[in-house]
Length: 194
Image 1 (tube, rainbow, N blue to C red):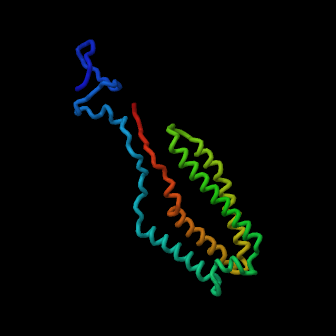
Image 2: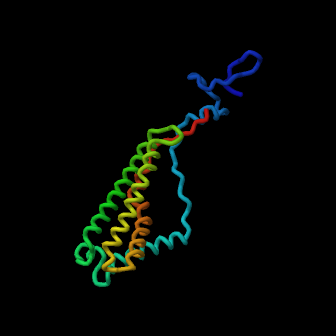
Image 3: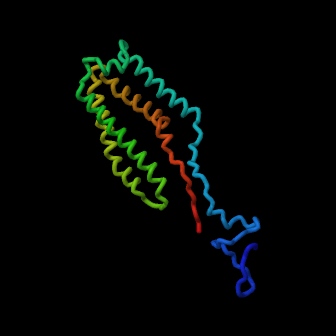
């Protein structure tokens, strides 16, 4: 045992928190928990080729829907200029999607900023906020899906439901690759056991 001080009874006692404590290097555990270690987010498990194929199929199907639309013009042109679309439900659906997007961006930024400054374990303020807005995001999503279905039904009739579901799944594939990956916090996270 190195770097200890005499103690009554013949043994040595280590001084861990002394300013003048200097070790010979063989007792490296003393300052192991006080060193800053960069926080490394857990890496996602590697994707299998089946998952990659599924993602490719969702994206290819969505690109097909966007490009071919109703076989005469693409979907973007249809949404802007076709008179068969019911405009009020389409706009209400877009408002619902916009509200959902704002909720997700708000909770993402809230989680990002709260994780940097909060070191306590347990249920945090951002977790409570994220849980409390989840029903609103779900309701806005369901209402938007219904509004889009009602607005686009005159063009594709019963094919509107799989069309919207395919576009939704393509968005679920694309969203994790967007800006939210850059909002990961860059900070030092340390777990102390003493």
